Image (cartoon, rainbow, N blue to C red):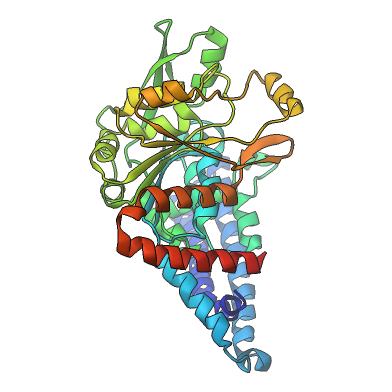
Length: 445
């Protein structure tokens, strides 16, 4: 991996130039818009000021980091480094694995999907993340309402999860403003909003941001239509808006009967459908069942592609129930909900956690009206779904979270064992490369 670091300055020079051009574009765009409209309005002025300040910050970072990359290239010691054959061999094998690795499609949203992507990118570069665009809360909801764009939050998290970027840049994109009209708004959301403003559509904006941040694989919104999520409760009431559904379920004490979207015939991205059909494996989740996973399945072309594909289909089950969505649900009930909205046969394996949870953690979740998701093997098997058990959770800040490295390793092993085993040529090549990658990962640690 030291060789990768040796090569990075030369690779990054072009990236910093592209980023600097983006900063200049922000400044020019704000100036042109201001002089064209000549409107003195607090909201407009805040937006123009944001663009100019953002452009200056981006330009500053690109210039300083670009200079450092150039200096690294001309530094005498750098140029005198000899290429170690072992390091070069490791790099070649790692790159070969990433390029020839399994074609994986990950479908979902929220923090669960981005967490899993952070681990998967070290095993294959053939990743397509299909992300829900039903979010209407928080900063994403505000931008959606005021600018008429698709919600950027989940997309931003997935881009950053797959990006090869400097810690400073990630901190900048995840920064949330603390005061003023931009309070609680993420800089990354605003960055993507500005990119959307200078692009033909949201998909192009996502592609441009992914290019700037050197993303491994692709991040795709499930649809470019203005998708609104709605839920019919068992008491007959209909709730509109992703952020309102869990709240109203809890307040009305009535579970979700079914979800639906408007427009009903929202069109899936062609690239997303093609990725599912060509995949070696499709992973649903992890994430909130009714507000992150299922909304993608309500786009008809996505659920149809899942039925038609020959890919191995894995559902990553949640560890704990979620108030207002999956109260008292077991793993089987999660699967039944997926089948109800996306059709039967779209899950082959369900990934369940076997690591024991301490009584202290369980009690903490009980205070939040949540408890451990039960695993009823007979009920799951009756749904024609196989169980894949593993330890892939960790405790972070006192809460259970999926561990990106453990989960990625667990899923890759399932894919190799259950899917690639039947392609002798692929399994021999992947097995050899996979062993190499594990050795490289250990050496980095």
